[in-house]
Length: 320
Image (cartoon, rainbow, N blue to C red; front, side, top):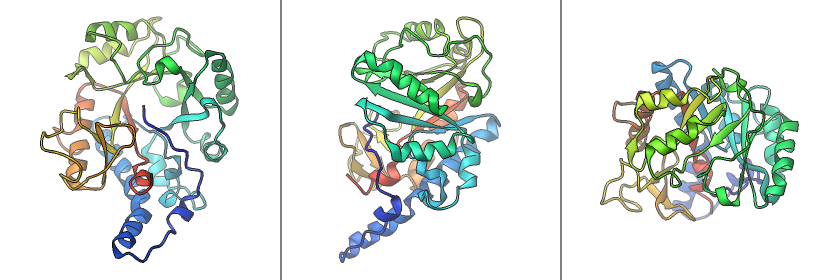
């Protein structure tokens, strides 16, 4: 789970900021180019993973402005970016604890929903809001997952499934419900975690690549691809591409803010994470393009796709 700051200011306005400091001027230039760099990053991840599996699913979380040229919604769609992805993962669209519809984001997604599947994770502080959150998303044609305050960190499996079915799900556009379960702290063993998921009928499930530091085996992921009722489903892996996490296997002991240089900024609210200059070659090699990369490990484990978190690093690197 990431802290979401809704981007209600047009990117063109943000990128137009100026300053007399030469160092800040350089930062503004980088900021102006940063949406394009993230678009290229996602596109290249897609190209790499689909060399191994042409049907590999790519779902960026938030940053829906990237569907447009240089992240500017007043410009034409970025067709290469749209071809590279299968849907949009969105956090807290109508509800952020209580009812707070974000009309700016809703408007963007309304224009995109006929092209791509929209998967919305809402957060409500009272279970009495669950039905309304579901209804609001369903009315727009969005697929929703509603988490309550005890599930703030995506660590529990809700008892009820919206639009439960026994259909065979082979593509994102067929998905009618999903489970977002990237925090496995409530499951003391990997076997218990896998058993809990196997006993559900979700069409789509987001999980991490690891359970307590142990990577999932391909045969374990393959078993998860069948619902309890016998239908087939999709298992998609969480991957953070905009921020580095100190608890990941790629992290080196001597790393700290500014060392390496692409560890650029502290992640507010998350002491173990740093925003990265995601266009840096060393960071990108950690993520994709070689046998030791994060993406290759996900492919080797047999996942159907990746859920790309923190793509809005293009904004947060330059704004609080």
